Image (cartoon, rainbow, N blue to C red; front, side, top):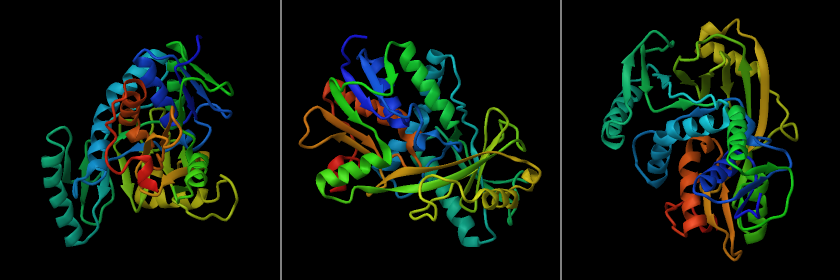
Length: 343
């Protein structure tokens, strides 16, 4: 390959997505990551692409909505180019409603907000259902939520990049525009560079069950837990959010606790066996939004970080705005997402 126009440091979901978008616009691109695709937090097993609640609308929620709506086309193009599957499907989500009149009223109010803010492109409704145990017999059903298998998605993106003439390697020389998409480690580098509290790494843990739900079943969000049926028949359970953890590093500690919580939410999972475990440290920016844009005082350097729990859902839109900026000089990054917002 000729000298790259764009070097992306980090083969997680943000780095690979930005590289793919730049390639699609004709740039020569290389991705460098010593660990390979999805080696960090993006190599998880949960993959719940869920929206923020449709109220108190702001730039972050609007950005996420557009990204979630564009995800089907984005992943179809990636999978077509790679010949692999990302595991993407927009299967929706059910959330049991507690026996609390205030909670039910709030859910109904949010349904009205979705009709206005989502403009018919997806629904948020209160429905009666026996599919998920609920004290009220009712659940919130949204049709915007999708699922993806994170490891497969990173592998599909990396293969698509290679098939289109880009490279994904363990090392190399930085040439052209340089995009820093290096996760929790990158947030620490930014914090040191600017002497500012950019963000922290937050540990997450998850488990994968061997069976229990069909792949087209809506995912469930109950008691703070995502239960996500995947395309291969497995069911992901997770994940935790831990600012501090007992064991240093990404070791898994809570396998049985997560399994028991899942069974309490969906008793049909009682006999499903744990077939895989995951733990990793996810990058949460101080603003809780992605950190995007030029790296101040470093001409030709850019940042795409802070995916935390919404990175896969945000990735299609993040890729577009970063490609706009890097290749065309067009800045469409929303308020609150910029590097300087973390100072």
